Amino acid sequence: MSKNIVLKTEQGEEIPVADSAAPLKNKKNEVIGCVVVFRDITKEREVDKAKTEFVSLASHQLRTPLSSINWYAEMLIDEDAGKLNKQQKEYLAEIYKGNQRMVGLVNALLDVSRLEMGTFSIEPEKTSFTKLIEEQIKEQEPSAKKKKIEISEKIEKDLPEINIDPKLVGMIIQNLLSNAIKYTPAGGKIDIKLLKKEDQFEFIVSDNGMGIPKKQQDKLFSKMFRADNVRKTDTEGTGLGLYIIKSILDNTGGKITYKSEQNKGTEFHVFIPISGMKKKKGTKELG
Image 1 (cartoon, rainbow, N blue to C red):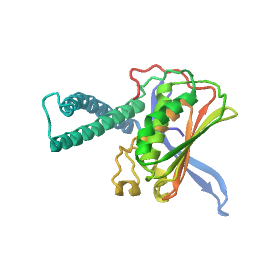
Image 2 (cartoon, helix red, strand yellow):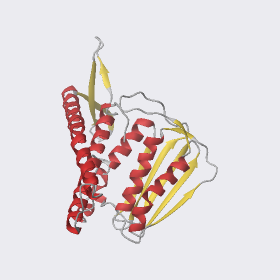
Image 3 (cartoon, rainbow, N blue to C red):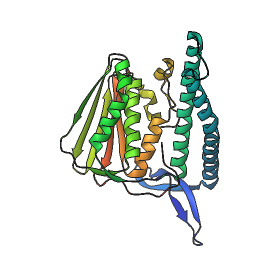
Image 4 (tube, rainbow, N blue to C red):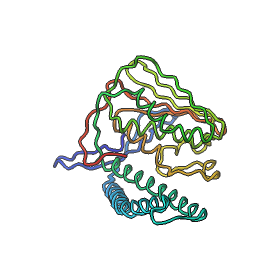
């Protein structure tokens, strides 16, 4: 069952449940039925909600001081408060870089809490999927050039516009493309494709980078997951990007699949229905 299933009592009370099933077999070891057990998970849900609310509150509180650090660091780097020597500039650059990482983590944690509490909004509008991809490629180009990574794109011509939330889909494209650049060694290659297949768009990002160890692939879309081979190289990252992508797609009728082999590369496939996304009212936006 999906994680949002509830049982309704005769009094109209809704109880969140989890289920498990076991086969019933006869003496010949033939399956003649099954036993399904429903378990009340109200307390577990309450604990999860409390944790999510705490993360959201803490992240909000961190935003203000981090913004101040960011602002003052920029002013110092621009020498608004006086001339700096080379060593001072290097130290300030490291402070600024570390603070930017913290801002990214806080924003990702806020996105996760909004997804889990269901407070995020979906605002679909007629959008060119092709244009969104091209915008993200342009944005990521400096990072790719720095590592001499070649990005090739193969996008079907004359694709129709689709009713999607451009901000949410932009986040999906940005996350997959930046991950591909981050986890592909210098001189590598990234291929991007956009196809229209019957009732859905298929967006593909493939690279010849580090890949994901087979024994850890089942944890790929878990919160804070980072593969062992990635951590050994000390590559920056929060481990929240793929979790956010999957959560967005699960909530908008899309799907994500992947193929990966360690030291050979990874390929992600994102499927979005041609019918697009349904509008959802929420108190917060993602990103």
